[in-house]
Image 1 (cartoon, one colour):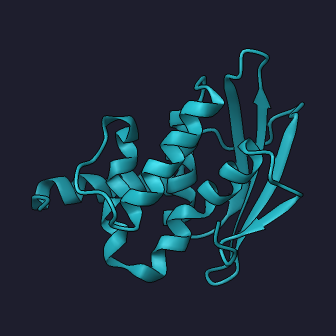
Image 2 (cartoon, helix red, strand yellow):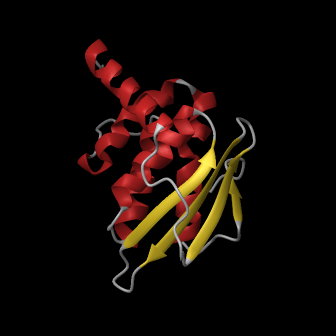
Length: 154
């Protein structure tokens, strides 16, 4: 169980990243672009990625939505910068398991994304917290067209 101090710290981090997302803005040029939508909440993110020949990732995003969707995408992109595609896909899977309440131990790889672990207690917010994941997983797995939705389970 999280202490009140830790819970407050996490809340402040989410609000900070929600108001001032990191890696926000269009990446030009980008070799991969995808839009993710959460029709339930109205969140929209557009991811811009460059995957280098050594498979390391450079990513940015644009969009609008609730603090949770903006913060989650910001924190996610912060962690995958310079990571390999394989490592980023592993991180995405770990993160999605965490927000769905399927993890009992938080892996170190999640870093600041652990601040969103409380989302599991609010099922209606899980789609907000995983919007960026849906888009990122699709585009990194080469399963993407131009748009993905949180309403499509993968």
